[in-house]
Image (cartoon, rainbow, N blue to C red; front, side, top):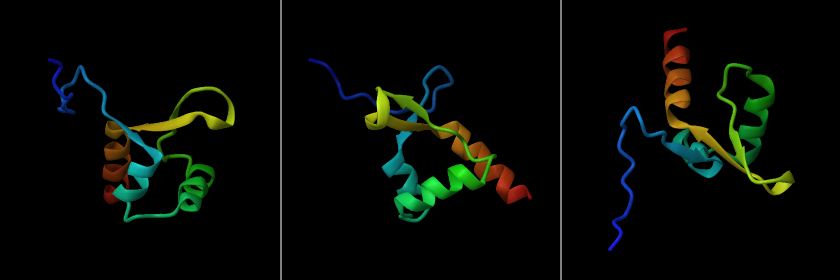
Length: 75
């Protein structure tokens, strides 16, 4: 019987967050906040898109978000 996949922070395994999870991570922000930060902050991690066209799902790499957070905290 297959087991549920656990998202361990193994260097070989990449953890992806959906746009909704990113919004929750930053204080339950709005979708418009995400759109604005992608346009106005070139240092914010860019999503990978899975799918075709405007219906493509956007996923953000957790390690990229954590690095961005550390850089913002250090500034």
